[in-house]
Image (cartoon, rainbow, N blue to C red; front, side):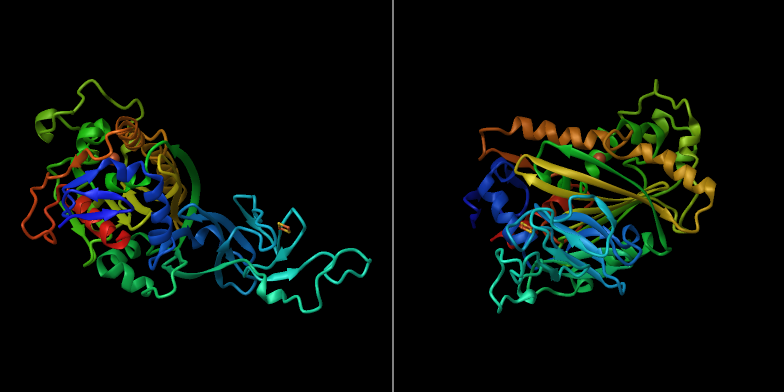
Length: 410
Ligand code: FES
Ligand SMILES: [Fe+2]
């Protein structure tokens, strides 16, 4: 059966073919904002540890819509659109801070930590200047509010009306993956941001694709942070919107050889001038050294050895997104553990020894798929199981993503 998404035809609907126009079309991008980012599902916006105190706020995005994530004076969490109810100016221009009120710079309309309008200059025209009619209703002119939910300190928001609970949306395997990383009170270590000239879905695919990990990333294969022959695991929800995958083993601590790891792209000439980079210290007692949890539509929560982070995918245009990294550790980390996390922070991020290549791979695709929009990406690695709900740990989670995507965009 053929199916279309915003004018783009899928030759098959099992996720084994993806027409390139799906990554380049402005019509598709606009439909995604409406059906996905404004649709009946939950979007990650921030960590609670980024706004621990009353009055703390942080600017973020739901799709391409700017929002403010705020902790009100009595401690409750709020997310509202960062767009003045007067004439549409950006209200909060800072990345984060603490404030009793959010004042728009243009005409000084003022909002509280819940997004409610609290004051308007010259409202009653007492000076004989301007003014609003006596029936001007302050409560009708607040900032547009989203529904908010937090899971163990990860904050999600939704524009959708009829939305399942966050727990129903994520389901047990994904909740377990979040709870594992958020089991102890979190301490924020810092942020990195990068702009990637490619379609946001190429990055989502990347984070559900174990096929590339030890091939694209020479560091993984050479230093053992990820090898295709390590035992792995995968968790998923019934609808296959999300994916929680990873690897067991701590053999990154042992010197690797090409024979030992059976990996083509082991780079024998590479060595680390600072071997302490690889001195891991187990955070968990489950022997998992790498866990990549990809939550639809746009956040990845990761553990690579002792590097813990969220990666927030913020689409800007069909060929442009921002990747926003929030690095964290735990409040009870000792100094040496924090130092190890900061050192290992060099593994990921825009110039990370491992993740630099992912942004480049996305751009390599975006650059090459101009014009031939009905040519398709080929996703049959796995192999393709006759039962598509069966996880075969190849490109299966990517195919599942596309089937879910087709459904929600239909
Ligand atoms: S646009 Fe914000 S006060 Fe006028
Ligand atoms: Fe990667």
